[in-house]
Length: 110
Image (spheres, rainbow, N blue to C red):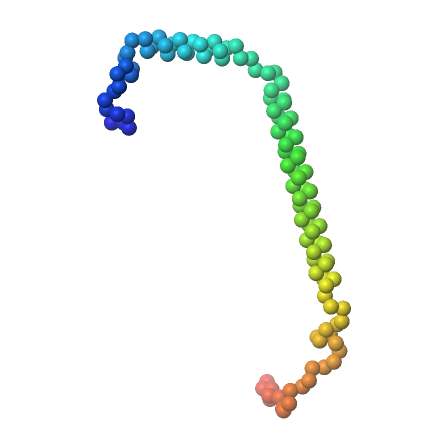
């Protein structure tokens, strides 16, 4: 049993009169319509050219985007490095750190 209703409506059975004739007329009309359609001789070349233009444009946009991101990252990095204080800081000041009071731990002998 399919999902259709088991009780057919009046006049919808596939064996009703004229059903095959209408379907055949429709097939013939569609066949005549399809026979009158002629393909454009330059259709493939036009479509391929359009596709190649879009591909070149995508690659150009991607290259520009990569260049912009790289440039921004470089400029931000240089700006951050430039914001560092100019004084040498505690580690490289040249003064020695105070020595802890008291004796150091003995070293083990080898």
